[in-house]
Amino acid sequence: MAGRDLRPPSIDRELGWAEGLGFNSVRVFLHDLAWRQDPAGFLDRMDQFLAAASRHRISVLFVIFDGVWNPQPHAGPQPAPFPEFTIRSGSKALESSF
Image (cartoon, rainbow, N blue to C red):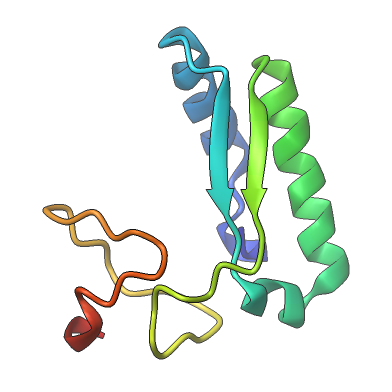
C-alpha cells in the first residue's frame, strides 16, 4: 500500500468481487518500509482500505511490518510476481531470485 500504488478504484472493484464470491475477510500484508517512509500516509492508506472493505462488508486483518519475505527489501517498485509460485511470509524458497 505504498502511496503511488494505492489505487482506490481497483481496490473497490476487487473487494466487490470478493464480496460477490462470499468472502467476509481478507488478510493484508504491510511492509515496515512503507511505514518508515511515510508514517502518516501509511495510516491514512490503511483507513482508506478499511473504509472500502467496510462498504463491502469485509473485515480486514492487517499483518503489520511483514518485511521478511525479501532478503533485500527496498522502497519503491517491487520485483515482478512469480505466477507459478506462492510465497509464504518468511519463505526463503526464492531467495536466489532476488
